[in-house]
Image (cartoon, rainbow, N blue to C red):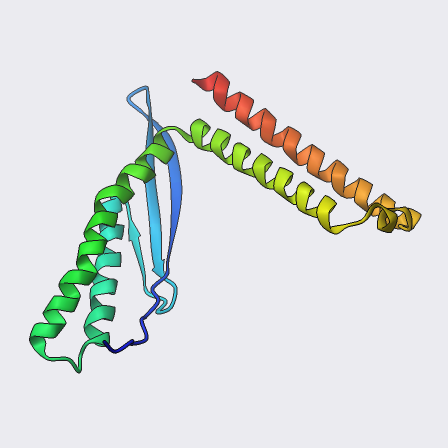
Amino acid sequence: MKNKQGQTASFMVRFNQKIFDKDGESNVQWRGKISHVQGGEEKRFSDFNDALSFMEKKLTQLTAEATKNEPIEKQKGILMKSLSMWNIIKEVGPKVIMKTIKDPLKQVNQLQGQIQGQISTIGEEISEKVQIDQWRNASRSDIHVIMESINDISKELKKLNTKVNALSKKK
């Protein structure tokens, strides 16, 4: 079996939320833009299925281009294998995105948990890598910079907590 170089396809998806009142009732609409990073092509969408179609079309083009020198039957087989993975993503992806959009508070809480886990991990790594004697030799200006950074992080965490509490009260 020959080992051939594969291709990379990266996509960036941006969502914009529009909240509005219509007939006295609050409504929300999500719009977005998807970009193929390597090629620069973009598509705007208000239905996520349009974004999925854009990705599927681009992946199909890339697979067809990569197999253009193969016999037609082999091209079809490779394309079918490539798209079978895509069909799974197409099935599961929108459900994950809708869960995120429908319950942002849950996602914020999950994100806070991940951040806290990372902070704990980083703290453990620092304590393993830095000997206490190295800290004793820090200058006053070094300590001042560290304290300012800790204060800035503390302020940002308080702001984030306030936003999360506000979201909790809205439910």
